[in-house]
Length: 144
Length: 144
DNA sequence: ATTGGAATTGAGAATCAGTCTCAATTGAAC
DNA sequence: GTTCAATTGAGACTGATTCTCAATTCCAAT
Ligand SMILES: [Mn+2]
Ligand SMILES: [Mn+2]
Ligand SMILES: [Zn+2]
Ligand SMILES: [Zn+2]
Image (cartoon, rainbow over all chains, first blue to last red; front, side, top):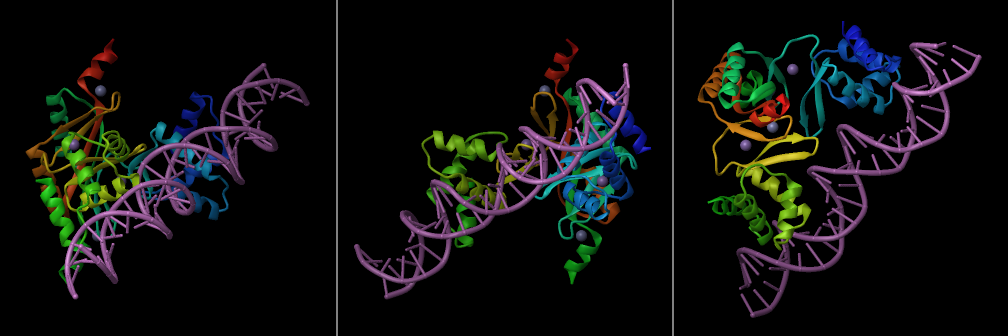
């Protein structure tokens, strides 16, 4: 799956599907949810795989270019990524208390955005929506 | 207006409304649209006002806390701010070609988001939506 | 007005994510 | 096997932002 896509992408650009790149991709695909480059690098190191920080960053850029992963957002602590191969487009709710991220998708929301773009004469390509607030759990905590 | 709010905010926290802070606020309010800290700092310097980079950054944080300005987004080139005092909440379309930012607001979109939050049991507080794509001008350029 | 202390300032050091450099290594194609 | 471009890793570098700290400013109580 992801492996195929990546190696094909690289071949087309006369680049190589090295063990480092393979290891990095595998670690990304084998874990779920969001991740950041530094944690990924550390996880790779402790697994015994080898890849320098530089290679991790370089590979993340390649994976973005080929569409297997995607930058979710920049925070004060760095960039958050997620892999797109598994799940389709969605948006995020971020709990400001516990940092929990809830993913959601709404067809209506997408349609509505398309309409708005059309009206502006804007050619929409992609978007990201982040709703900040408090998750169920943290709302309860607050009440006590 | 903004001046009042800021000085009141500071007084409540036993902090001071200094000339540096006043100058920075004034420069922000007197220009329209989005801005970034470094450009603001340079603009201040060339106007003959004085304020160090450190003070600019410190003041931006204060202004965020008191709600007069707001972080729009973090980019690879730093943080983009805008002042909230003037215009109400809105979202953004970002042209990937020329970097132009189009602001828009849709009541329907807001309502729809509220509904989605309610269904998830999520207490929404704020949100930001960025649609990336191509503005009218850049669509034309591409065709030629 | 004077004074004492807390808040502020600016210059530059420090931090931190991310990129770049470059010499050594690898790998694919011939 | 030879060749040569692509890749790698260590560490230098960059740029945005924060921190440090001595000097200065402001406020408010005297
Ligand atoms: Mn997600
Ligand atoms: Mn705006
Ligand atoms: Zn929460
Ligand atoms: Zn454009």
